[in-house]
Length: 431
Image 1 (tube, one colour):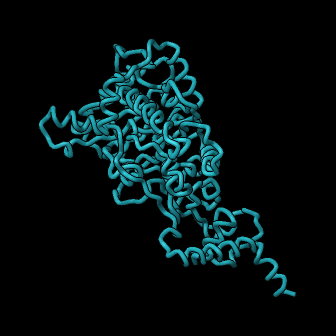
Image 2 (cartoon, one colour):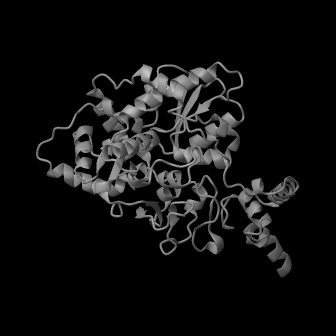
């Protein structure tokens, strides 16, 4: 399910292996960006803008879709820093503590291993300050949207660009952790910060594109990503090799709850908050926000994967089993990790948390056309769409009739590829 990156200039990092594909169209039908085509009933190809969500990976019965990451073998670990996703702590069952897992990762030879817990606690307080500040303004967009899920951010930039203004311009915990780790190690070792390589241990197929082509930042503080499914066997071997387990059992201190849907807002003390997970639910709620139907909500935590990041395509454990592990670990918790409020307020005022970058829409052909031509194109698409049968069958090689109409107008497909329009013509010719 995962491979190593070969070309850093790629514009997406979820790839279809044509030699394994039989053209079944399952991936094409679930793609939220409508980026996949299956022409002539042959093999699936990515022809549009891929947001690297990994939905195609989930449904492919032949394992033909792979996520591309930095991998593990290509990394010079003695000179590399690993930023751990809390999801890793949910992959080994309730009997293995987060502390044991952290120590096991440290045993894999990285220069340093960094947890996100402290930064997450500070992020939440900064987020509360931002929500409170925007709540006083009548002109502020509502609801505000979490910047944490890279799939949701790219989905918004592609399909819901009017909602980019709703996305909170606070740097995500993984990026804040990478920035501070890079700075700290560079100072300790007396080297240029650019010489320090920082990698995210992730459950997410979209981390590579968010690093190489970020939407909310000018550039990422991370250098690459390692899939949890890649590093899992090594961590498991290290755990088995450790005779004495001295790991800290307190799950809360490591923000393990962030791994599941609702974990982000669970740490917030005020506001009308909502947590939504799963691709179809995410799209449905973004549509409602676009129509102005959720203005009573202050903040929405979106996660594209079902049940949150524990449902990511690069995980190992079943998402429901991982959710149970979070609950069991949470029952053993002591007092939760608390941020230094005075420090957060000082950093907030100084701009320490903010991206200082204006996100832009991505990928729409009509956005690159002159206005008159874009209007003419849309009129042609609508005219053709009304002439199509609306079967949404995918037999033409496009995911639905509306997308097929766009493909024909853009000369990427022929109207003759619609089997329902072809049949009446064939009957007329034979008669």
